[in-house]
Image (cartoon, rainbow, N blue to C red; front, side, top):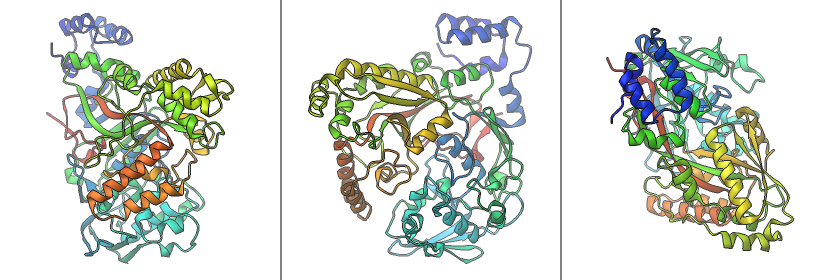
Length: 557
């Protein structure tokens, strides 16, 4: 049976399909009750998704409530998706391949040794207040991202610039030592510390965005830029911020000043804050969304078995892992960390608990990273786990202090947490306290080091293993584990300085194998993206970063 949910939602009154849905148990009980009421009432009112489609407004599930919309403050995907609509860097991703295409920069040159890039900016590039986007805006933005006072969590991405790390670490005080300068209003020069073959890929990330330098004086002493807030927003992307209702949605509208406004076909996008896949599924089936951010893992098999065309599953460059706080005395012992890891049946979690194509993870770098094959096995050895825990001084778990496992509110995260709790109890004889936290509280506790173990995920910022492996270097602001090892730093630095791609990948593999031998974190599984999408949504292409330039998205007639 092939079910077209979008057609059913928009047409209404198709009672035969309703009976098929319930007979095949495709819908959860809550949705049956919600939509059943609509059928009994005759479905006389047009649904929000249908109305929005007529207006050219995309209703898009976007996960948790954004913490901010300042690219120099945020790290989450919920924020990144919106920021990529509001701001544009020197380059922009091809909607299908993610290859860097000209953005604010209409062209660029690079020296033979690959150390100096010179970008020529578009004369037509404008901020939403009508002011031109200049090379000085990029200088101001990159220096701001690196300023120690700003505390940008993604500042380490800019360490490829000459002098960037020293400035960010406070070793030098003069921002002019950073390798970026405006040669004139439309010419920007970037000087690198080494040849970085994926530099243009890195520039796709919003942390490299410009800032409206002409407004910087209005932001003195504030970490979040005033130009990123409702009522005073100034951006240079394809869309502008028009409304933000906390814990409901962020709405953006087509920018009239964007240099490529003629390409933009949507009138706007409403990013819905729904941090629960079950609620997203209900919203989609009730005609309140055009695309979800996720789908409950337990529901995927039913949709897949019925060949539902709205179901989309794509490979994804992401890893779900257990973050361990090495400041904790017990977790500071590698034997305890290894015991915890070896007692987890990751295959069971990926295949039975999730079952949407996720792959059990042995390494931290996703196994679909192009050209990278470190050959790190997925290990499950309860006997060895018990032996190591005894060697650490906790035979049968006796004497091990109580440990807390923190996760943010989500049914999927809860199920995984409960599975881990049961496995550790059964195999090691230890009890773990589960702590379910609201998203912002979770972020605050994680970033301040106020946790013992925590659910975490890292999604690639660009397509190279370094976007995952850099995370655990001593100077990385996102190294929430509090683990520092000069041997690891040296292994990764050697890989980064290797120009030959094959040898560089071998260097990355050495660094990652060291990372896992120390069990710095416990990778659980590698992601796929699973969504429900209205077939009328066009220009949206699956890719391993789940990035979708919204300037190319539109509705079919």
